[in-house]
Image (cartoon, rainbow, N blue to C red):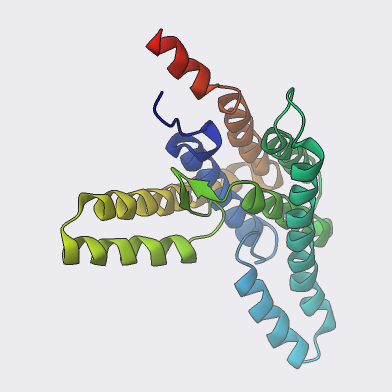
Length: 227
């Protein structure tokens, strides 16, 4: 049997997760006071700027999401360790489930609790970025674009240099994930204008779809086709 790409590394799951990632960033920035859910580089920059100006309140607004993001990464690793021997539920499925619950809870926080809301969103993003690091065997992120943009451009240049179609396919894969992230941001801004704080529930829907997709056993399907 040929090697089968697991659903956790599939293009379709990557697209859904990237749309969720774009949605979260748009939501936290537009609806929750200009804080990035995923782009911790921006948060670190703004934290440093406000810290240098002695604006402790604004500095804290960007500092806590950074810490929460790191804790989310650590928690995803703990899930991997705890569930790696389990057959009933894969650790990535549990990660998606927890992330969906967190984002659903965020919709009940009014604007005066934006600091907590943004910290929880960044926490969820940390879980996602650590749980899903590859698409079709290629290192890729579904919550940020800088690495994907570098890989897309590098592979496109390699294609023009070597004319190998593999590089073109990889480049288009990365550009596709970037496009999906952008689409998620567009959808996020659209829903924020209509539903304000409650719009983050759309991310829970995205993650629910992702969770259902992850119960598809591609190896089993491939075996059945060969029989």
